[in-house]
Image (cartoon, rainbow, N blue to C red):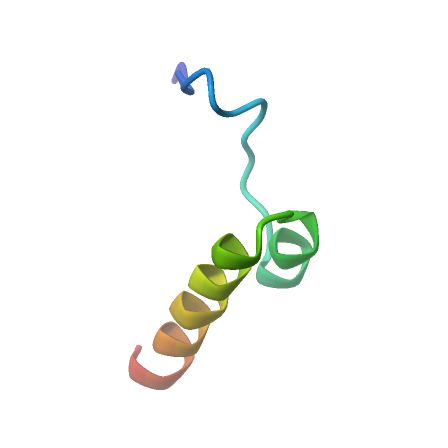
Length: 44
Protein backbone atom coordinates (compact mmCIF):
# COMPACT_ATOMS: atom_id res chain seq x y z
CA UNK A 1 0.00 0.00 0.00
CA UNK A 2 1.40 3.39 -0.96
CA UNK A 3 0.70 6.26 1.42
CA UNK A 4 0.55 9.79 0.03
CA UNK A 5 0.90 12.64 2.51
CA UNK A 6 0.38 16.35 1.90
CA UNK A 7 3.21 18.87 1.73
CA UNK A 8 2.25 20.02 5.24
CA UNK A 9 3.45 16.68 6.66
CA UNK A 10 6.91 15.20 6.78
CA UNK A 11 6.26 11.65 7.99
CA UNK A 12 3.66 9.13 9.16
CA UNK A 13 3.52 5.98 11.21
CA UNK A 14 1.42 3.68 13.37
CA UNK A 15 2.31 3.72 17.07
CA UNK A 16 0.92 2.54 20.39
CA UNK A 17 -0.92 5.31 22.23
CA UNK A 18 1.87 6.42 24.61
CA UNK A 19 4.52 6.49 21.89
CA UNK A 20 2.20 8.40 19.55
CA UNK A 21 1.43 10.94 22.26
CA UNK A 22 5.15 11.47 22.86
CA UNK A 23 5.82 11.97 19.15
CA UNK A 24 3.17 14.66 18.65
CA UNK A 25 4.40 18.23 18.79
CA UNK A 26 1.20 20.28 18.52
CA UNK A 27 -0.98 20.75 21.61
CA UNK A 28 -4.24 20.37 19.66
CA UNK A 29 -3.07 17.10 18.10
CA UNK A 30 -2.22 15.72 21.56
CA UNK A 31 -5.65 16.80 22.85
CA UNK A 32 -7.42 15.05 19.96
CA UNK A 33 -5.44 11.84 20.51
CA UNK A 34 -6.20 11.93 24.25
CA UNK A 35 -9.93 12.41 23.55
CA UNK A 36 -9.93 9.53 21.07
CA UNK A 37 -8.09 7.29 23.51
CA UNK A 38 -10.56 8.13 26.30
CA UNK A 39 -13.48 7.46 23.97
CA UNK A 40 -12.22 4.00 23.07
CA UNK A 41 -11.34 3.13 26.66
CA UNK A 42 -14.83 4.09 27.86
CA UNK A 43 -17.08 3.03 24.98
CA UNK A 44 -15.49 0.16 23.13
